Length: 203
Image (cartoon, rainbow, N blue to C red; front, top):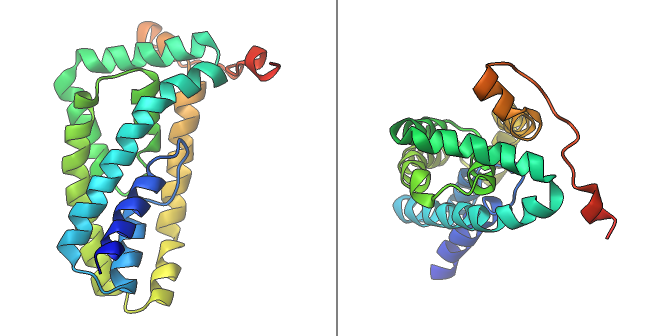
């Protein structure tokens, strides 16, 4: 039924809409494809479209949220990082493409892009290509390997998904607590943990 494909779209969009690492969108796509015996190619294209929309919306709203949560210095620090990436356009596209090809949460990538107020064309095209390739492989493998819903759920909570979550949280930690201006300008690794906007929290 058509509404099953709508569930694929909404599910992929929702997991990529939140600013913290969740299971990759392809896990939702695999689950719904097997549960409702859906055609693989529509699931892939519809799911990737939902994922792209979710990430795009994330980049739109996160600058407003980060301005209230983080100190001005932290926002300026990430914006400096984004400016440096934008100056090397082809390299930033390549980084996004390679990262999107790996089975890792792309949340830190889009958080950085959103807070840095990078233009969508710096990240969305390469993300789209990477997601199409990686999600196609994942959904085809899921259709081949997972014969029933129980096996699928067991596979979703495998060491690979746990490792992906750990890596995603590590990258998020690096984005928030590394002093990127010091690292890029002075080639010196430094951390700043006092990044929260306490004045806003008291209001």
